[in-house]
Length: 215
Image 1 (spheres, helix red, strand yellow):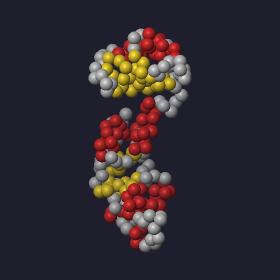
Image 2 (cartoon, rainbow, N blue to C red):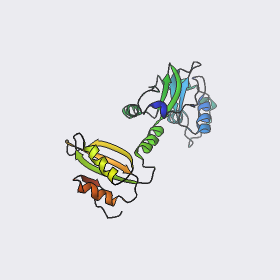
Image 3 (cartoon, rainbow, N blue to C red):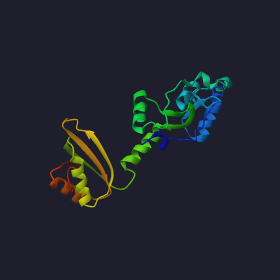
Image 4 (cartoon, rainbow, N blue to C red):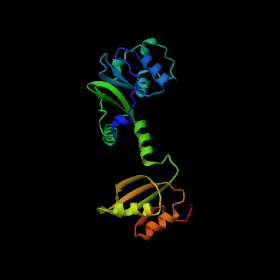
């Protein structure tokens, strides 16, 4: 999946000459937490977040009424030369950038101009969509040998049982390096028969680990 498929293309933005008060009003109006700061050529110069604004303004518990605080230019508080992405970047690689750099947003730039924005909330929502947890169903975790053809064998069980698979995740088994864990989200509320069939085929079901109990 590419960034252009999930990015927001209608991105509110301000310039370095706008003020803290301008940013506060825009964040409140649009109900957002991040603002790209651009010039008249739509080149990204910086980013301002709600945290930047909180740090630059007095606490609501303080009795401070100096209007000059709110008239400071965003150039003074913005994060300059922020990390940016491209519309054709892969979403999973972009998620790694978020994690490695501990950032909450990523301006998306093409031909030197701002064309979109993605946030950590966008990535989280896309993860929810990809895993299928927003749809009614059941989760089944299976430990299998880390060798070719295993996924096909498991998939055949689902096919024979006429069970629709909503999503599949694969990750290493931290206890046994020559095994991996397959996590299936399947479109059935009661997976008891399916689990019994999987076990009958010789596969180790980790979850649910007590078929018939609490199902």
